[in-house]
Length: 241
Figure 1 (tube, helix red, strand yellow):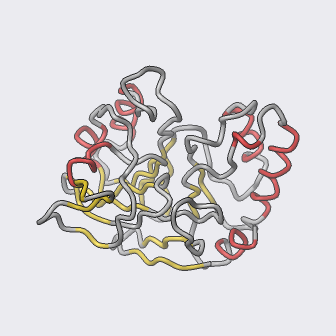
Figure 2 (figure 1 turned 90 degrees about the horizontal axis):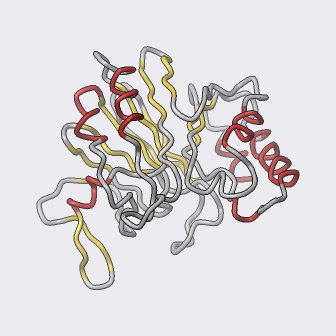
């Protein structure tokens, strides 16, 4: 909680919580404890305006997404408007998409962004150059990486900055999110992969992968971080908290 409190002390116009805010599987049927800990975490936001998107673990318990959103809605500084929504702030169009949890079938481990959600998003940002925020990265990134021994690397000639410390973990099915939305996007911002911090361009859209801000990230004993984004220039800065 101290790291979260420090994160919300960093000056910014708004904060985006990219999912897996509370690890649902730790709570099972204990809604009371989940809500208590969710409020403890949200209390650390102070008066900083924040927007929330679901990760794949937030509702893996007895809590429904509507119940979680109801608690988030109690906070006056919450800008969250549902599972999928658009905000217009400081001259920017900000698109928030719920990338789901587990796929209902054998074709993929992680859920897909449904075609109807992509169509909705396309209508909402038509004529704009929006910034999209969601938890799980798009499948298109896999075409840019290859396995080298036990680790993964970006293919020779692929331009990027930052670090690829694990294989990106998108769904195994590509529903065309990038292809369909790219004409109306300038950036896509993702969480999910705790130890990756790379940034690159795909189809003319800046892909921004964020490190975990939590204190229980796997595989790499990192110090919790936040990534500051200048929405005009798309420049970023990683700050340890």
